[in-house]
Each structure stands twice: as C-alpha cells, then as structure tokens.
Amino acid sequence: MEKSQLESARSQLSSSKSQLDTARSQLDDGWSQVNAAKAQLADGQAQLDSAQKQVTSGLAELEENQKTLDENKAKLADGKAQLEAGEQQLETAKQTLTTKQSELDQSKAEITAGQQQIESTRTQLNAQKQQITDGLSQVSVGEAQLQEGISALESAKAQLTELQSQLATVRASYNAALENPDASQEEIDILAAQVSALEEQEAAVTQQIQASEAQIESQRQQLAATRSELESGLAAVENGLSQLSQKESELNAGREQITAGQAEIDAGWIQIQEQENTLAASKAEIEAGEQELEKGQKQLKAAKKKLSKAQKEIDSNAETLAAGQAELDANVAKLNDSEAQYASGLEQYNSGARQIAENEAKLTSGEQEIAENEAKLADGEKEIADNEKKLADGEKRLQTMRKSFRMRLKT
Image 1: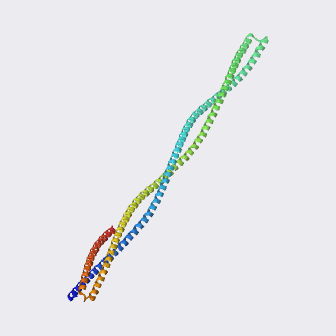
Image 2: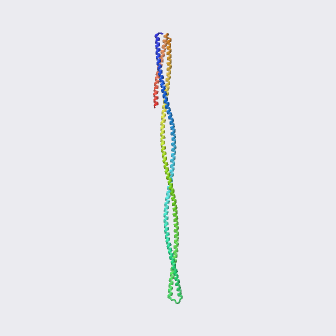
Image 3: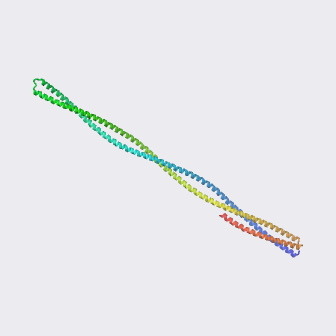
C-alpha cells in the first residue's frame, strides 16, 4: 500500500470516528430525551393516580351521601305517613266533635223547648191556681153567707118557738074563754083572731124556716162540693207545679251536663287546633326536608356527573399515557437498535483500525477494506440519520403528548 493511500485510509478512518462520535452524541441526546419523557410520564402517572384517588374518594363520599339521602328519604316518608295518619285522626276527631255538637245542640233545643213548655204550663197552672184560689175565696164568702143564713135560721127558729109559745098561750086563753060562760063573744073573737093570726105567723115562719133549711142545705152541699172540687183541683195544680219544679230540676241538671259537654267539646276543638298547628309545623318541616332532599339529590347528581366526567378524562389520559409509554418504548427499542448499529459501526471502526495497522504494507488490500468500511460507515451514517429523524419525530409526538396530557390534567 502506498503511503498516500494509507494516509487516505487513515483520513477516512478519522472521518468515520468523527461520524461515530456524532452518532454517540445523538444517541446520548436521544437517551436524555427518553429519560425526560419517562420522568414526564411518571409525573403524569402520579398526577393521574392522585386524580384517580380523588375520584375514588369522591365516589365513596357520594355513596355515603346517597346512603344518607336514602335514610333521610325513608325518614321523610315515615314522617309523611305519620302526618297523614295524624290528619286522618284529626278529621275523625272533628267529625266526632261535630256530631257531639249537633247532639248537644239538639239537647239544648229540647231543653229550651222543655223550659218553654214548663213556663207555659206553669203560667197555665198558676192561672188555674189563681182561679181556684179565687173560687175558694168565693166559696169561703158563700160559706160565710151560709153561716149567716144558718144564724138567721136559728133566729127564725127562736122566733118560731116564741110564736108557738105565744100561740099556745093565746090558744089556751081562747079555749078557756070558750069554756068560760062569763067570757064575752068579743073577747072570744079577739082571742080567736089572735089565735088565727099567730097560727098564720107560725105557718109562715115554719114555711120560711123549712124553705131556708132546704136552701141552706142545698147551698151547703153545693159549697161543699165546690170546695171539694176546687181543693182537689188545687191539689192537682200544686202537684202539677211540683212536677214542673222536678222537671225543671231535671232540665237544670241537663243544662249542667250540656255545659260540661260543651266545655269538653270546646276543649276538644282547642286540642284539635293545637294538634293542627303541630301538624302544620311538622308538614312545613317535611316540605322543607323534601326540598332539601331534592336539592341534595340534584347536588349529588351533579357531583356524580362531574366525577363521571373526571373519570372519563382520567381514562382518556390513561390511554394517552399508555400511548405515550408505547411510543416511548418504541423509541427506546429504536435507540437500542441504533446502539447496536453504533456498536457494530464502532466494532467495524476498531476492526478497520486494526486492519490499517496490520495491513499498512498491504495498501491495495487495505484500500479495498477501507473502501468497504467507508461504504459500511456511509450505510451506518444513513441509518443513524434515519434513527435521528425517527427520534426527532418521536420527540415531537412526545412533546405533543405532554402538552395534551397537561391540558387534560388542568381541566
């Protein structure tokens, strides 16, 4: 081998060494980019794991909140059922009180009618009593008058006795005169006239006495019958008034019962009003609870939707990370291939160097080998250039993935 050729071979070997050094530097840069991408992927995975932890925690909290809402919903349903039962009981109580009030009003009307009837009957009985009393007074007057008639009769009887005595005396004188021859006719006529007059007077008085006795007896019987009838009527009136007083006492007792019943009904309405107020307050609480429950359901639904969206983003980012990891693995594989090619090129370079050292005397053979090595180096440079382009493309895609991943993590 000529010296110029050897120098040329050495120059080519030096150029190959420079190309290998450049390839080494490019490979080192590729590994640096790969390590940076690994760090970014690890950071993204950590952020993704943190986000997943937050979503999982949020889902657990949502499940607990849903359980609490379901419990509150059951409590509200139970409270609503109790409220409806209470309202039904109140309605029944109202109907009962209304029925009792109607019955009480009917009793009041009956008592009022009874009192009016008692007053009307009492007025009639008092009028009858007054009439009977007046009648008894008239009977008493009649009895007094009868007593006066009896007294007059007794006086008439005394007068009759006196007339009879006078008549007996005059008649004795007359009879004596008739037997006395010395008695003159005139004297006899006078005595006869006196006897006749006294007999007429006796007959008249006797007739008057008999008439008076008959009249007095008739009046006495009439007055006695009237008194008996009036006293019987008075007793009946007094009994009627007594019965009215007893009925009035019963009505008063009924009034007291009605007053007590009315007090119970009024107390019942007051109690119903208090229960209605309590139920109204409970109803307001239940309605407020239902509104809060509805609000909580809406919030829970919104939170579920938000967590679902976050989970979808996490899943999407996980897919992005997986794609980035796959691309990174592909780039690592390519770099490993390039490392193998580099090692092969380096081995070829070392072999060429050894061959140059060994075959300095064999320039022709050395030149041919150098030419082959240059061809191989050219192929290696082309392959390294291709790998550098692929690595640059992978880096661009990795940068795009990083940017997309960061944007998704921010949202």
